Length: 293
Image (cartoon, rainbow, N blue to C red):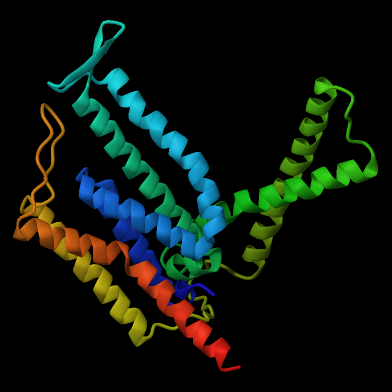
């Protein structure tokens, strides 16, 4: 069981929104480094260490490509490393490319954790009363790709079991894949229409319609929300005062370790690692309960 499963949907939603917001709107290397490390660890504890390590095998090459692409198009900076086709490749452009690649990868892993925690029913619980049609659309969209992936495997296996899956050559294999894709699209459209008709028959989105929710907002939810909002406010305030300012051009600015900067780093660490602490606490309690059986 994931620790976020015990929270009301508003708590993890605000938490992931906060860490993604902080990650996307900063270029400070320490803040991004903390966010990247905590994002990978959080994703590993929520989705599984093996899946996360496997995804890192694909993420790291992408990071390298992003890091190397920036100096090919941006030639700002004063420290020239070498020339490529007559264009200077600067140290500042390389470091900025690394910084951006870390930011993009961090956001990817935060969204990966968000997707594992925030299921469709939780999203509908949050926004069903405010924007029911939009909530239903987004909920269906978030679960559409995993369902299509599972359905594709089922159709592909069924085609092979029936013996109509061609293996003669590349063209025949392509035709078989196109046939499977056509069946998949048809199934997806039929499922969408059935879902829409079912929700309409139940009166979803009608004015005055009540709905039952299994989620209850408790004191633990309120404490976690307060913790998230307070740390986010502290980070924004310190960033407003300039503690998060950092530049790569024309020269790389030295990292500041003053009082305000230290408070900013600590706040970012506590916010980013909050999910890890919750998962460690949940796993510890679970192991203690198992040991008493």
